[in-house]
Length: 82
Image (cartoon, rainbow, N blue to C red; front, side, top):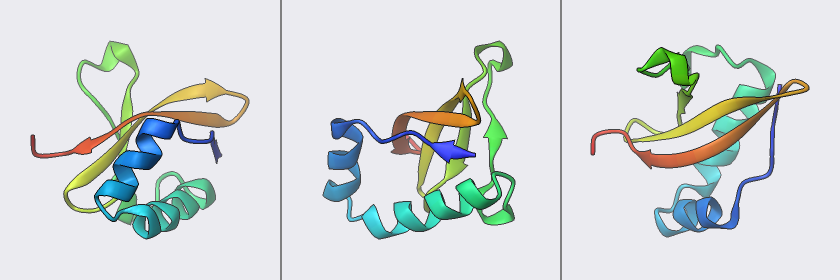
């Protein structure tokens, strides 16, 4: 599984919250094993939208879709509790 390059606004979001190192670690784990326990990968509600998430930190999550060809695209990174 490969993660497509992040959009500029998502990179800025990570930088502004000092999450770049944590993102790189979680990205590596996801690309090695999308179901790694520390990622807590899940299908979001409503399920018919086929949006998934994985944990960056306890507070932040990456929202993604499957883009085909064994790739995913991160569509958002947000505060899980807001």
